Length: 246
Image 1 (tube, rainbow, N blue to C red):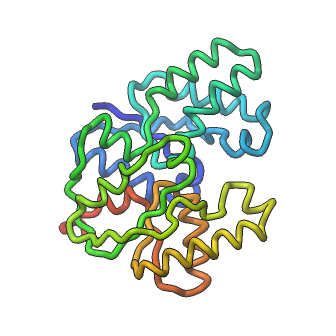
Image 2 (image 1 turned 90 degrees about the vertical axis):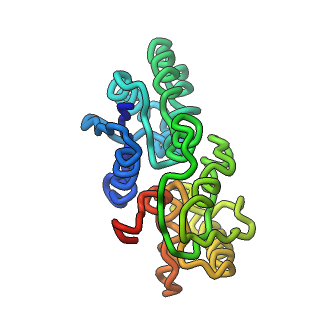
């Protein structure tokens, strides 16, 4: 299968390991992955902050860039959620019915990594090896917009050597929320403190999730406290093997 990677702007600029791991994993499973170089931001930050007009060119670019591909995969539940649930809305609000139809079509072919592996490829054991104690944080958009459910957990349970421990109050937001963390810093920090306490209560070495944005927020807090707990994207765990090292 020929797959187009939507890396997301955050992964592209700050956490490229997540995007690289996604490519390596899909290639290891026997698929051809391409990176359309015209891609930019999906526009989620603009839309969520109320700037729908400014997001319109980004929606147009996403549709134009990825329209030629049958399948698009992103290592982000947040961005995939925006593409699925907001792109058509933005186009309709602008009165561009043609763009709305195109956005709906391309969005229907855009998948978050875990749902693509389980729903499209029907693969649960990806041949990974990761000998660490791991807890999983289900990010808000993947949980509530995409409804990925237990897909990431099913993948993690099949990773050899991995000790998966349940995260208390897992469904509670970590407090990032994009610009929310900037505009409501005190509330965001309090939410982060709760999330970090729950992560530390598990005794895990690693906290994983399907979004680098939440991992950046959680990881920043854990790092400042010098806890020794790492944050690692789900794709980086799934691509790990004994021969490649972990």
